[in-house]
Length: 329
Image 1 (tube, rainbow, N blue to C red):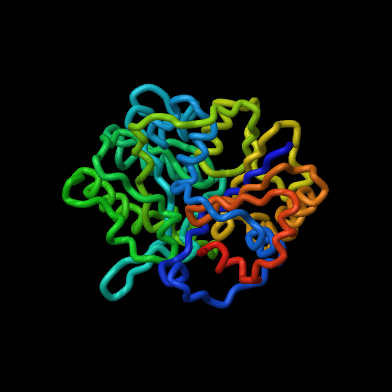
Image 2: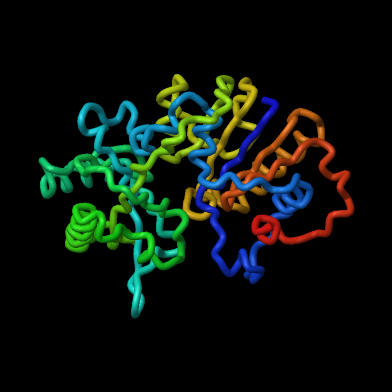
């Protein structure tokens, strides 16, 4: 491995942070050091489109949900595939919000039960298909013109502006009907008794593609790790086996030239939390840069790519800022 990319897939800063109002945060000394000495950040936008461009070919022209559903859904169901992400919402006086850790994970034993229950109510027009712990595939819904935002961008924020508008009446109707079904679902009552968040809605998204086509590097010698549905879909296309992100960088098979690892740092498993990543990934990556084992490290978060190269610490004149300030820079 000569190149390493670490993607923090749910780390988007709220507007007040980008404007310079930085809240109290935990110290991340390794991440702080890496961001301090990184090259000037490059705005890459949606990390999934960035990754598809790295893979190359024509994948960027295919709807995200179709890639995610590869080998999980087929035929006409794949042609109308949407990602359906379980989310937890909360009602405020005048609006609804996605709770700050509101991207929900389902246990493997739950997924089949949720699909069976949904399909008893909504089939044959709509069907829910198992995809993994983070999302389902919903089929039967036509494409709409306006793309729906990645729910990770809305953690802790008002959802109203991101919801489908009057131009998508079928999507709006189905969205509402699913929320009503979930509200009375016995499956949600079981989650509540187990001390877990109820599923408020299935966030329907992922039907948009980039009509401009691929501008990718067509990188073949690339290994993917992570639990995001896109990582899983690409892995089924490219690799002999799926690879969730291991607990530490030292457990990575570094035989490929470029390794990409994705983490849900705010909403994922404890081993994906920022403190765990700082100790087990960022520290090891810093050491590898220092020894020359890595030619470059990219950290992608908040729509930006931060590139760190060997001898980064030679930029000793750069003033010290918190890692969050550097992310917003």
